[in-house]
Amino acid sequence: MAEKLVTGVYVAVLTPRSADGSIDAAGLGAVIRFLMGKGISSFAVNGATGELCLTTPDELRMMLTVVQEASAGRAEILCGVGAPGTARAKELAVTARSASYHGAVKGLLLPMPYFFPYQQEDLELFCREVAASTELPILLYNLPQFTSGLAKETVRRLITEVANIVGIKDSSGSLEILRDLTEHGVDACRLVGNDTVYAQALQEGVCDGIVSGVACPLPELIQALWREAARTESEEFASASRLLDEFIAQLNAFPTPWGLKWTAEARGIVPATFSQPVTQHRREQGRAVVAWMQEWLPGAIEATTR
Image (cartoon, rainbow, N blue to C red; front, side, top):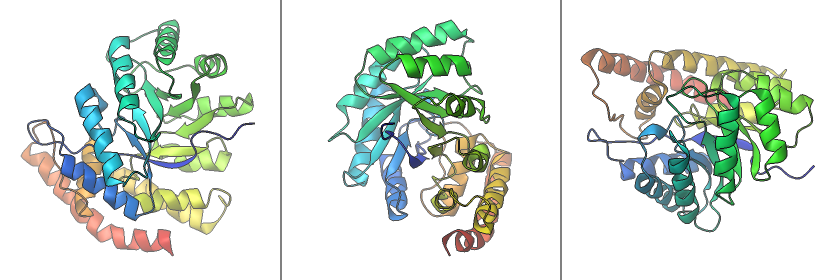
């Protein structure tokens, strides 16, 4: 079996935006430099955590440029090309390739078209057409919370029949597809895309890595679980898993990017800014999470880095 294209911890990068909706390039650079300082150089750009539905091709080019410059050319990037239709997905794929310097963009993350419900045959044809338009490797991006979900049979067929579809980032919160690929011995990159099932996926041995939103403000925790992947019965693994559950529980009151932005602010990485209006009540909730994070963080860091 060939070496897999993508393994280990990839961080789903937040996209700081100003009130007018424009990308805060300085803030994005600060996020990347923070993560590089924590030993992270693998990033997923323009996924759901990065609010992909807001991104234009020009903005994607800017984002990729910032990430590569802030990482001093050391970044390995999975680039999201989510779109409501085939033409825009292809356009984003072209942008990703042209904005990649020295092979920094290792592959594309391809969500299904969002907004409308589609049947499996619709999704399969969409994936085949986008894949045929690019030479870059593609990982299917299963995100049934916001798009039509992929069936395990569709995933298995696309990976085995389309040369440059090499795996999947499954953000469904279920391990059904990753288990199916494992049980059938399919040579695929199997990435968890939902932090809630990360520990379970490691325990079952059905993943090759994770694209983690939690890792953006809290890389130490996700790295700790990955380090213990071969010792999932250890107290260190159990402790990190409990801490992850505690952290996720704090995020559940918010849209995921909002919660992660509040916690990134609590760490002093970048101020929490939003392209949508935020009510006073929500700001109070955010301040409460910031206060909780500041109290909880020292113990969590000590527990995951000792």
